[in-house]
Length: 235
Image (cartoon, rainbow, N blue to C red; front, side, top):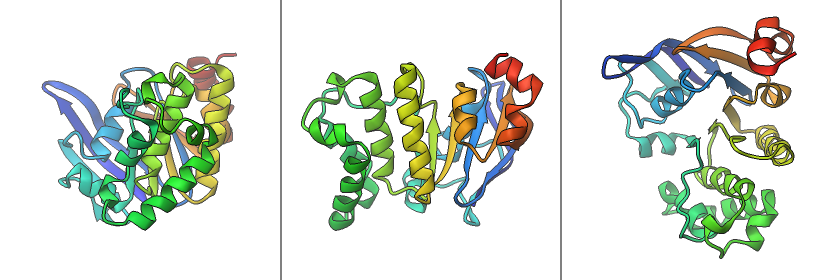
C-alpha cells in the first residue's frame, strides 16, 4: 500500500537517509524504531513531501509521491501527525481540528462526519472544543494533533513520536486509540522511541540507525530480539 524503495535524503553534505526501503501493507500497523537523529522523522517528512528525496521511489497505492506537493499527497490519503504536535496554541481546539480538513474544504458534510468521529474518539475534546489548544494538558494536545490528522481522512496515517513527553498512563491511552484507529481500517506507520509500548500494538517493525534500515521483523521476533531489547527496551 505504502512503500519506500531505496530512498535517500540529504541535508547539505549530511546524508539523513541512505537507501531506505520499507513498506506498510493495507490495514497494517508498522512501527519504526530508532534513537533521536536516526532518521525516523526524515522518513516521514520525505514521504509527506515536506522534504525532497535525493533519490528513490515512494509509492502509495501504485501512485508515485516523489515530486508531488504536500497538499496533493494528503489528497491521496497519506497524512502525517508531526512530532511535537505543532498546534496553534491561541486557536480553539475546534479550529485546530478543522485545519486538518482543509484539503476537503469543499465537502462540508464529509467534514462534519469526520469531526463527529474524531470527537467520539476523544470525548474530552468535545468538552473543550472552544478552549485555546494551548490551555490543554500535554496528553490532550496530542489528542488534538491526532484528531487534526484524522480530519484529513487518512488511508495511511504517519504518527511521529506521539508518546513524547507524556506520562505513562496517558501513553497507554494514546496507544489504545492508535490501535483502535488501525483496527477501524487505517494503515498506520508509527515512529517511536517507546519501543515496548509500540511493539505491543504493532504487526511488524523496522529498526533504523544512521539513516539505514538495519533490522526488520514481526512484533514477536523483535520483542524477543536481544539486541533490540538491550538498545530500546531494557532487560
